[in-house]
Length: 504
Image (cartoon, rainbow, N blue to C red; front, side, top):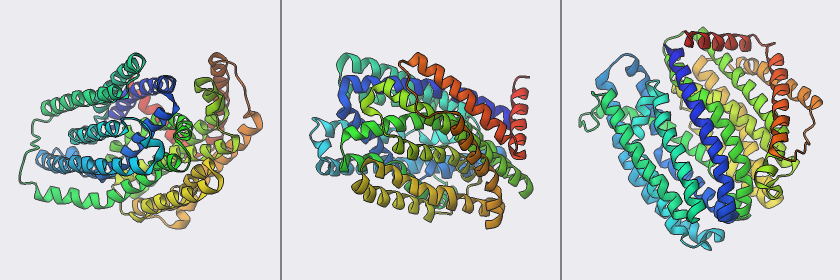
């Protein structure tokens, strides 16, 4: 049952994600062409600032989902209803808090970042972004329920369908009117549409849910207690993933934000595709961990870790070998980064993909007690980025992120989870990562001896041929190397078995 739901989630998510990614690339090119690099930089800065403001969410979604896995599997309707009611109550406060913080943030940025204040109507555009974000929290608890109940495909159909339609209409509006206000207004309309669809779906499929119930003290306290730990993970994520554009716009300019974001857009698209698996299996892994013994948990741990190391190795190598030509053909030579910066970005991409395995295990197990790690990660990232951007410019921001990745994501975070989920020791942790790290390292050396990084294609047709050949070489070579691992062979058998069962 877990496998069927997981595969259904993956299939739906894959189609929607690919559509959104493709539309995103078209949208970025059109936006740069019709609105210019400064306006594009402003839009991207606002998106990242919204990510910072979303710290007000405090991890309610993750905390609530971890509390819902067990009562949903046991059909305890009253408990499920009370937990969801508590989450809805918290989200009402968050919606108001987001609006207040958003207004304050807008004032600070407008008067402290010169490249923002020179753009006409920037405060109005920002207000629209804040209102849209506050509105999105009005249906967040519905998404939590459906995802925790292994119906992630339902949330993706509604959210993804709205996103695809929204981007398509935004493209038309930009081409016709070149008006940023209309561009943002489209998103407001589709958020209202999502609110209606989600409320109707939950009302029909979960008639026992009473989000206006008054006696939910115990569940509300559970949610609050879990939030206390998850909040620090959210804060750390904000400090790591939502400060780069602000630092670049403050110390460099909005055009530099556009250049950096073009690469990050590609990386985020790749992570989104891999995250399809992560999002789809988290609920199933949570169900597995709640029922199995320590030995079976360890086997699952090893298989998840090596699977995402495999994905990270393949995708990072293909990206590193093909991205420069893609950027040049997509938006022009002015947006191409130097090779050294690209290598550091590639390392960060590897970490972004491989860390998905840790997020799956953390969210599925509900182990959010390492509150000091995400804060430390975020603080190190900001301090290192600000210091280095003044010393070596643009590259400094990328290196700052790499430093925090090495200290926390590569070392401290997996060690913490290994101890908490498996009761493992430091030596046991080292032994568990030797194989995936070694296989990734060997793969990188062999691929670089076979393939030249510097390529130059004259059009997308020749780029696609070169990228296809590179992908075949990389995936074939890396797969052969990783097959030396018993855990990798086991997880492949598990995936093949699940696929064959889904076809019956």
